[in-house]
Length: 515
Image (cartoon, rainbow, N blue to C red; front, side, top):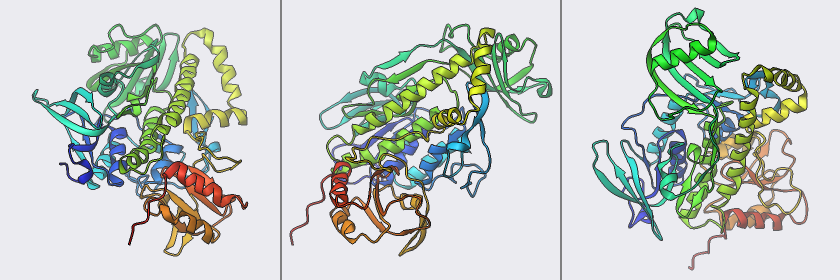
């Protein structure tokens, strides 16, 4: 039996097996371990490769990580994360750099620089501290679901196979997910039309290289030049997809593609890594099939426009973790785990939609020039800027939480504000670090606190005063991911609505023990 697991795992090796030790899988493992769930992460690589294809965390992800106390940790070299928006933050849509993301961000940093490999290490280390076990060199080659568990056949780098059993399995193993394929979940959507390359190489004349984003009638080059080491080089070829998506890429191919698009030689050598990708836009038909669930790129893939992919995956993990833990602990109300798909599938579908629009805008054919110019003009209208910026940052995400009346906070991530509690000053984000639901009483509602007392085994109740009345309520009930499911409106029905929300999201109260 794995360290950190209790008697609930009797008869299986682990309560949850997370397949894939990238940032999504390790964050999910941390979420589960935080709540006392036995979790084992199976990672195919024998050791981390240190590659960071993604490095941008947008505002909603930063806010979500702040609610777990992880925001500072995921920023290399940063000890204090910026809590305020300081001036415009330019960004692009379809490589048109006319957005100001700061206009839609009310809390915390607008963008956080966090290389994927660094964030993965942070999450894995903290998951292990909380009791999770990470198993490197474990390739999933077989999966069989039973009535009360799943059997996983795992192969080592030397070819030895063994079987591991788990109550639940989560595939966080990327676009080519073995979990998705072995469980028979269909990957639906549009196939590739663009052939793209990405790698890190040494530029022999970095000062003369076409730096930044460059569009020609033959495609795009993206070069982040580093005169002292390796430079990131990307190419986008709109003539059609790769003939062989899985064939190895050589530095000669990358060099030739940059030269073809740029129209002149760009000398390079010493590749650290080079990979192929495309604009395929695919989404899993099901995020849950029995005891198997999917998260991150295993559930959705798209062209990397705007750095939205890793953000989607990390928010998948934070949405799923507490729900799966509730199911395992036995207090989840009927249908709670299925809200993972009903909430996250539409969010990913919307991202795939905006990414396809961006790819269309990036078509290098000169016939697209007028469209790009017009779109660039439109992006300077406040309403258009706000609409597109909310897409990119994730701040537009809300969930239908079943509120029976108009509630301005229900379904929304509640902004973190300073609070004073009997235990001292804190913030709303800090009250959620433990990953538990929260009833926050801001007006001394003894009756509401008494009503919530039977849920004390799973819902924290905190009395506090806020530094401002920005929330416009005297009490609110939050899910562990920070989204509100109820707020007091000062009506006679507040207690009834609170009881309904507690039951709908956090199950029936625990039965009192007989003396």
